[in-house]
Image 1 (tube, rainbow, N blue to C red):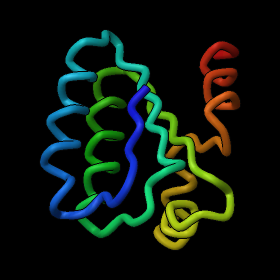
Image 2: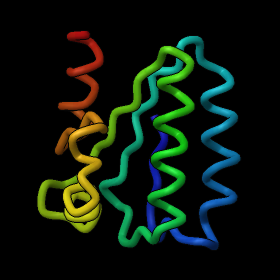
Image 3: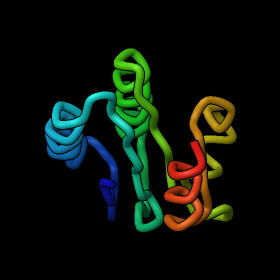
Length: 103
């Protein structure tokens, strides 16, 4: 599980990308939970990182789950971009972990 807090913008994306690559490289197949409950802002680069991570993990036969509050900025962003139909989204970390155990 990787928690991304604060702003996911052009300043944070390189650091977060490096962390995600390290985590993904250590899993076969990767099953990645991204906890975005404390992410306060996400720009186009941040959204691009989420999509890139999703595509990378899926190509490896893995799974990406996002934890986002239902009334938060990230949920609105995923809905506006129609990405909520691609990502597996859960409102709490407990729900996300239960979803992994059920699969």
